[in-house]
Image (cartoon, rainbow, N blue to C red; front, side, top):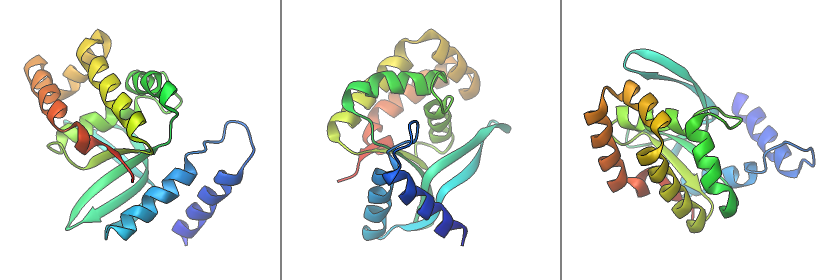
Length: 179
């Protein structure tokens, strides 16, 4: 019953003309439908997860959907951003200056904790995904404030550098495109 309510709310958001309502709900439905067609089991929609890093509760995080494949659970965030806005939105999501507050940073810390699995950001175009990957890696490598915060959570500069190198190799696992 709870999922039925959430799905109806997502559908209502698609046709809403109210300012400030996200229009990514349509893409969310497309992504969930694709996951189901690909044989993935959807175990949550608009589901909350408590993200814990190093034994410390970081924050509650609401994911667009949660899938399970062969016992492996992945929290999925869907993004339908226009390409010209992607780089600034990636930086804002790392810094916490967007409406969702450090959403990307929390997901990257969780991705690291889960040994580069368990979290995925899905985009609706290859162009947006490529811009997101480049902006994310540039910001992670060059923004001293983000580096300091993430280094504290990851456990030191050496571990942070190793994570960045591994993440660079796994970018297409973390940021994907729904086709």
